Image (cartoon, rainbow, N blue to C red):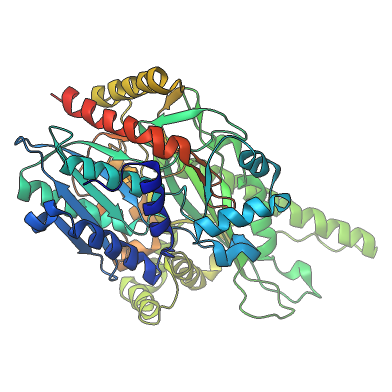
Length: 545
């Protein structure tokens, strides 16, 4: 008897998954995988084939889950159903945070307190839609729920092909789960003699612009890099401001030039990536004093489609050159004003700002102190490490900048994880044909219009299984300028593993991912979408010859 097929059954399963507070890095991120394993272990198919249901441990103890269901008719053809089980934190829920993982109660509370909700949310609650609120309801435990439903159909012989469910942790941070899954999938492929014809993700549809009414299918996923910029000024007392250069002034000019920068608004066809936006910005003083900050750092979310990392690095370097000129002119201009106000003929101050990337800074440090001494200092940092990847990478850059303080004032560009390759299957005949067939099916069966676009704009784990045309050059550029790489802490080696599978994203309907109003529309997602997914899987097997 099947138990994850009707709307009410799917809603019940989703609510059970949502009650696990699987914030990335938390204990419940492990617990929810164990729960999925427990649910599937009780299925007769996995009792008869226990070796087809596995968990695979990451280095930090977290686990991913794979569940393989082989067709009753022998075949190598296999479709991967990919989802992630982690969610982002819940600080944004405020007074509702105690209900963030209790979707039924939270939805009831929101219905009772509509006046406290944004206008669009109120309108949704008063519409004909059936909305379920809660962290992870949209992004993306609904996708995992739907894949459990498809796996159950596979067990009951719905398609002439193999299905492998893959549920991974850590998608919201570094995608450590998917990076581990590459080797896991390759092992299963070899062990079971499989051919991966398609990877189907079910991340939710993301709006392309505010109030976007369209529904979407995706034949790929945006790429993402995280460039950081360390600004190293010259310290001084606040009473002598023109004897130094404030790192906060430097980072302010840099932020003005980088935030929403138009040169990085890449356009491919009708699709345009959102411009860069700062994800972290601060000076690195650890306590208050009247000495000006010596160092400051900013990190930026930069999205990409067809651009290579090297091309983006060149644009970022040009922005640094513009910033350098502005900082130098600012100091000359302001010191001249000060002399004029003071009524004397003091010479205006001048600072020449150096601009480097991390690779150049590292080589400068080696030239001054030798390879052995530089590595010794970095190993000491590693021995005492308490920081996460991004903060530790910044600390490494700061340490090398201190070694090369004669270059100050300086701006140093570097990269930190995560990195998501840009992938698209828009030239793959199976995927393009499948998108057309799914779109036609939605129109014929449900009178719904769905547009196909090349890149899922929410960023996803599909990046690590699709085709990246700049794969090696991107890895090379990141390897040079990622501080963690030279200490053997980088994830880049995982990207060198050969696993490229055509990909598609067909997901549920929801709104406000990563917001306290995150919600899933269940009429489409749990009544119509299961039929769409089933049809898509059937068509993929039929058309893959």
